Length: 227
Image (cartoon, rainbow, N blue to C red; front, top):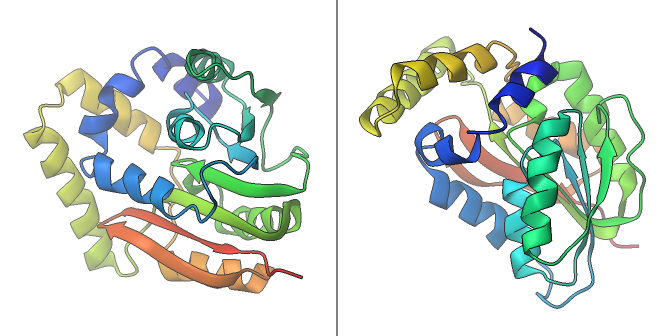
């Protein structure tokens, strides 16, 4: 099974499990939206990389009604869920089906976001993607990545993984749900937070920061400098 198949198969029940599989769900997504620096009425041009079911971008759309989104993913069944979510908000986003690591996603965006997706790339491909994202932003634009990271030591990484397992079991994950999640996690290629912040700075991003961290769950990003 490849990663595309794994996430297509998970589409139907994906959203229902988010609050269990992301134990810090409210703070994680809440911060991801809170750090967007624009006025709520601004007509943003926005891009969501690895959209999935549109959970993150849907939250942004609900709070920024004049945003015009482009949604990109290679899991068609996930994107269909995202389109239904946006239809409920009265919006018809542009949809790009493809692998954002290899496919052109355009440019001149005010806002580029991603949630729980970029950690599937190798470190080299992460760095390349961050450079492409920087070039795709308008001056003054922002990139926000809500994702998971590797502990920077073996001890910390083990701690992160055990904390996640303890938390989801406390929240009532079933054996089948846990097994399916762990199967998808086989495609993870986590990298330490510090390494990714350095990659953003090397790509040209300004005011790079981590706005939220709970063990492996983080929200970080940066700005393209205003001309």
